[in-house]
Image (spheres, rainbow, N blue to C red):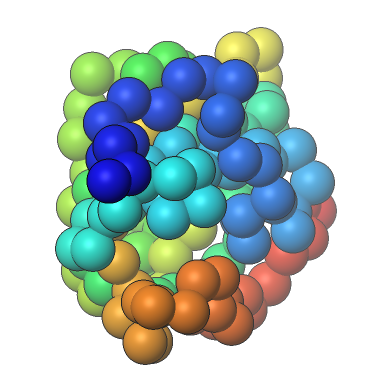
Length: 140
């Protein structure tokens, strides 16, 4: 019997998530089927955004929350902007159009992202076509 995956070592994090379509953004998949975890209802990642950069404007069909590990920034959600800083938590409603800005000119913004799996028939066929709808990627 195969032993279930409980711990994902940092060396096993997978880069290349859709958020990386914007310059200055790194999006690590941590608790994902791609890292060997049999996650069925929740995923977790770590996003790093370089100073004065932002994630692409996007939406998806699940709720998500952020915990801010480092830095300060703002989230634009359905056209309204909300400021945050280290130690804060952010809630995103499903299908809200949003992007995250690093408003610090010196420090990289780091946040943990936890979301419900965006069900599009993920299992038993993983990976599937991305459930993200990327609306804009420029950092101008």
